[in-house]
Amino acid sequence: MERIMLRIEYDGTHFVGYQVQLEKRTVQLEIEKALEKMHHQHVRIYSSGRTDSGVHALDQVIHFDTTLSLDEATWKHALTTLLPNDIKVKSAHKVESNFHARKNATQKTYRYIVLNRKEHDLFRRHFEWHVPQQVSMERIHEAVPHILGRHDFTAFAASKTNVKGDKTRTIYRFDVFKEHDRIYFDITGDGFLTHMVRIIVGTLIEIGLGKKEVSCIPEAYETLNRRVLGITAPGHGLYLKQVQYK
Amino acid sequence: MERIMLRIEYDGTHFVGYQVQLEKRTVQLEIEKALEKMHHQHVRIYSSGRTDSGVHALDQVIHFDTTLSLDEATWKHALTTLLPNDIKVKSAHKVESNFHARKNATQKTYRYIVLNRKEHDLFRRHFEWHVPQQVSMERIHEAVPHILGRHDFTAFAASKTNVKGDKTRTIYRFDVFKEHDRIYFDITGDGFLTHMVRIIVGTLIEIGLGKKEVSCIPEAYETLNRRVLGITAPGHGLYLKQVQYK
Image 1: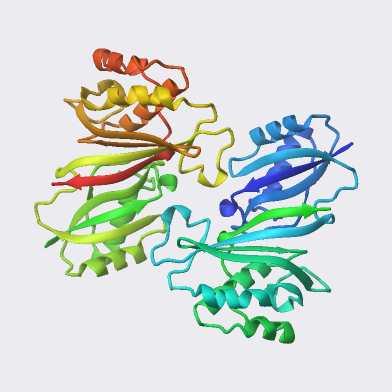
Image 2 (image 1 turned 45 degrees about the horizontal axis):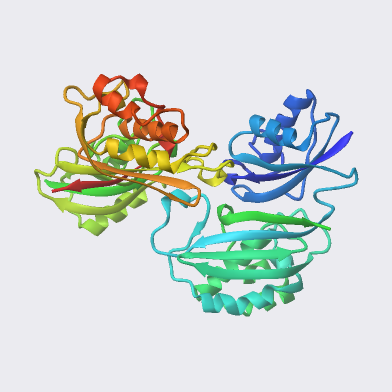
């Protein structure tokens, strides 16, 4: 038995998310189907974490155990052939039998892209959030330091979140910058609650539009109340960018 | 009665083409449906020409006649609201009653995009043709002058072409350039036969790969034989870029 780790990329547009749900098209289901064709039996895969409906991945990590003995290039090639064209295997690696894509992940980086101009970009409509009103980068940059560090992010989680217990997370890095008409939010932390990045981005955009004040962020840490924050930014602007391991 | 001209953009991915076909989703059908909602009766539209399945438009031109009396900004706004999100109205203009989107068009420009590197770009897979083998730009640049000018392009037309009679066309401009891993083909002519741009691009790519010789182009003018040329490049790399009028 060998444990294989895959680094994959996917376009989330036509998926209802990562995790297997009955009758729905998910990334996990497609990969397990491809592996089943190779193994003639079900092979369960484990990812670094699920992504929501419409959310993309530039570098998701999964692992599974196999009885097949193939080299890394062959794994990549075989799965590329079997997978639909909205999932790509970037690389395959043989790993130690105690490697776990979720449990061993120490940091994750997400990217969120906002198009901030009057007209939307038709050809990128599934890949960024279009905000037509002028957003103040100055106000956003004022808010960013309040997100950094260790906080109880309860207020930043979807009410349907599966996470039980402690909702304290640490944000190590948060770079927000504008290039032409696009605002990029690159955020790295030790873990993220359901919708957490999307609520952070939705709140920062509302701060940039003058609809919310920067003070809503410390208030959210204090009150743990979702309602003091801004909207949940749509899933299609979000990308899982990197998963780091020790 | 007023004649309205629209400049539109569309993502051709989920259309079987421009022209109305029974039971199929086409650009013409979607626009006529939107106009029918506004007029409570069918309104026939006329375009500068059809585009094939999967082909995009950055600036397609259509016209129609209306009994409604709306200003140009209202036309744009009303149609933007009624149209699906893969068609965008760039602008609306009141034109003379003898303006005709197809008959008055004097020149058209198409763009074709080829991604020339080993790995495809998952997020742009509907918007460019991925050619993984190394293409020689030198060989392509040798072939380009043979396309320019006035020729009988019979060999460059799909066998199913609707065009009867004369297949002589004039190519005024043909710019082929590479930026990073992408090759852009910008071609302007007085008219194009069905699949003509795609056959030109497919042939130039095969010349760039060393599968065809430059001499196949003059040979095609001579023999009018489709088979001496290269493959038909896929529709999803093609964009109608501009339509010009006197």
